[in-house]
Length: 188
Ligand SMILES: C[S@@+](CC[C@H](N)C(=O)[O-])C[C@H]1O[C@@H](n2cnc3c(N)ncnc32)[C@H](O)[C@@H]1O
Image 1 (cartoon, rainbow, N blue to C red):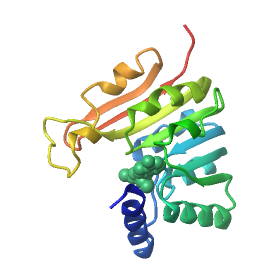
Image 2: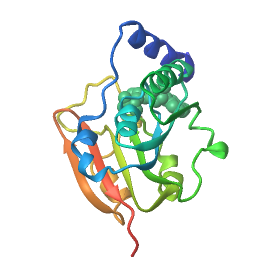
Image 3: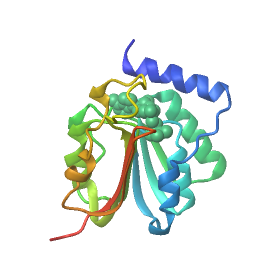
Image 4: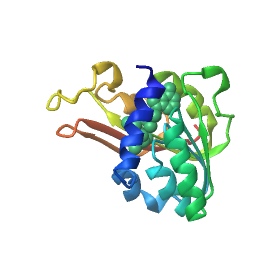
């Protein structure tokens, strides 16, 4: 089954079960830094992070390959009157990435890993803007997650990838097998 169909099916089940999308718990804890502006939510799913950020006065571009997810996010944005612009987009289509240079105050990418996005995402963030990412990593304690190592970060990977940014929060949770970073683009 191709990626789009697979995710459409998963999202359809969640919508049918009336699962309410929640924001990422670590992102929520960092709300003191989140004072509004322009933001992009990459591979937004059902939009838990987008809805949370829009309520903090961000104008959000929310992109995902799944039209089921994007339709749901659009309905929620209209219902709740939130500034979210949801778009179906395949992030592997590098040539047309919605990532113009220095256009976002914040970029968020949770539980989606494509290392080729790091450079364009970095460039799309404004000076002093923020990046938040969380996904699985190759933890010693949590190996069985039904996720192959190809889709997991290496230990310390986000720290070294964003080594020249100001790291405001970093965590590797061995039990849950997740790695989280929140960092700021600073000069020099
Ligand atoms: C594990 S979900 C994470 C959703 C959301 N970021 C969250 O943390 O709840 C992964 C998401 O990536 C999306 N996705 C998978 N491949 C994609 C691609 N090539 N381009 C854009 N989105 C993609 C899926 O539709 C799905 O919504």
